[in-house]
Length: 157
Image (cartoon, rainbow, N blue to C red; front, side, top):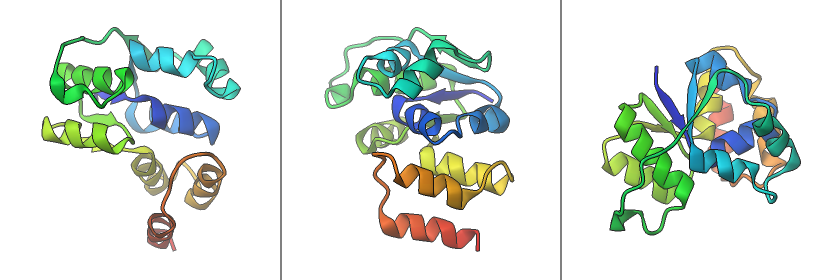
């Protein structure tokens, strides 16, 4: 399976201590170099920077292609590189949360999943307690609509 990830899902999965579900669900995950750089910036949470400084062997960092494309003007460097790399590699999934990035990825024919989708798949596979994971996620700056959380948790009643 070929999986490319953007910044936000990696950030939040580290913060809620569920980053290892990516390896268990997908094996290897590819990060574009711009995503790697974003997660190492001084403004990133210290737990994220520490994790990123000691990457496990199931994470691969690749230089992304850079092209001038006006459709990317509203996306940040990590999103642009993630979309282009997912296209180049014909990725099975692009893990991305930001709405504009998701829309562009879908417009380009990519299969997308976000942090919530990853947590859902991990819960279905018995890799985590979805209630605990969602509670931890809600204690971060992640935006999760209350009705989305409620609908997700109802699936596991």
